[in-house]
Image (cartoon, rainbow, N blue to C red; front, side, top):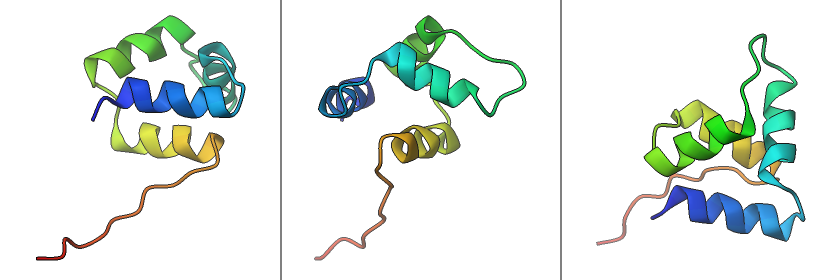
Length: 70
């Protein structure tokens, strides 16, 4: 799974830019970061689980853990 592509698809569905997402993420931070930093971290796969949860929450989604059926 390419997280950056998935997030960009969700952004497109919401008609939201990466900068707008980053601005919303920065609202609750003491040390805001730039949209390029977010994009780079998405590309490198270096986002923390908590950050992905926060991004998904902003976009109206959440993570669901399901047990595999064997």
